[in-house]
Image (cartoon, rainbow, N blue to C red; front, side, top):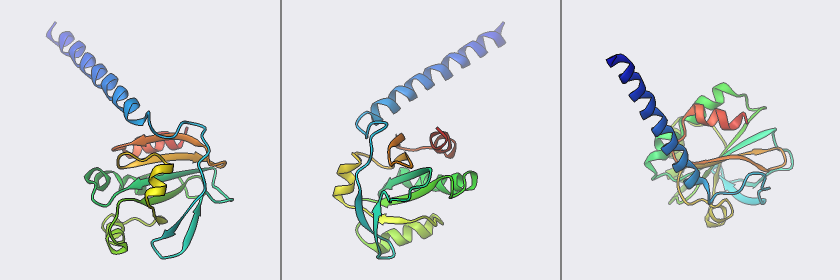
Length: 169
């Protein structure tokens, strides 16, 4: 009898957690770009100093654009999941672009990329990027289709499984 009560309690607690988590995610994401919205073309300088316009005319089937701030503790925990995601989906099936926001120097971003062993294109974003993509917290990412329309979005920590799920939608 105690075993049945234990399992019912556990299922109830897990259900409660999932409902609260889903409600918080919905609340956090409500101010982000709407699904099916086509993103505006913006230009930034890459970490290597070259101009880069996004979205490009030749988009991959899907692109994950990941916005972070180097001081963000959650970004430090979450950004490594991009490497795990890359091991699950090839570059031809999912393009990954990282946009640094709220940064102080190129060296700060370069050190951040080395610290996390990341080998993705990095754009040095500014307030215009932050406004156009409605970034209100870090990390934030969008998955876009080949027409640069929003397929999915997330704000805050996302596991590699969460990123993979959104990228495969």
